[in-house]
Amino acid sequence: MAKTGSQQMQRWLAVALLLAAILLVILVVIVPVVNKGLELHDAKNNLVFKLQQYERVLARKDAVIENMSVIKEQYQARGLLNRQSTPALASAEVQEFIKRTIVEAGGQLSSTQALPVSAFSPGGNARSPAATQPGNKNEFNRITVSVRMTGNSRVLRAVLYKIETSTPLIIINQIEIRPVRGVRSRATRQIELSNELDINFQAVSFMRKQPE
Image 1: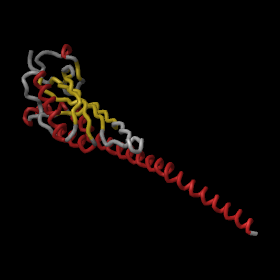
Image 2: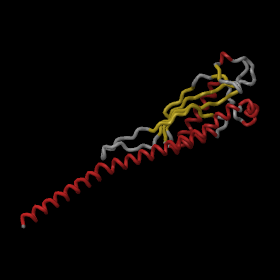
Image 3: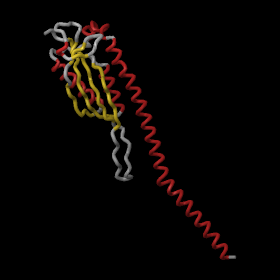
Image 4: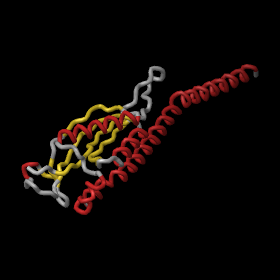
């Protein structure tokens, strides 16, 4: 009888150890994996929401371009055109403004690059300078600067707002936003989520085309 009780006790002990082992696996392996999956899902949804917000902000660009022929005479009166004497000086001014804006917002400027100047006629498309007619008062020089920066969503929001409300007018074009890969933790050996974003965009300014 005592032997039967001892065997039953051993079986209960084995079951208890098995349950303890399963619980330990759940706590050590499954729960962190599930939590990490939920964090990544929330981070993805948050990034998608922010991108949708930025897309709505950038939609202003299309409206400005479509109505260029209507507001061209208002440019000078409101100071929306760049007043530098040459495209090179205008590009340098845009680059300096972008750099100052990113630094003040707490971001990091990776690089800026002045792209070739193109001619823009209200109601038409950008064209190369060789395709323009000299002396056309309705044509502008499009000053384009390619920008690469890093920063979190708060920094990006501040930079976009400052640029979109700047005078002279600067339009954001062809923006690309990618999350920066997280860094692997030495303690947990897992990749920690990063709030940093890698951002590429073009900043476009306009100046009246000088008569040749």
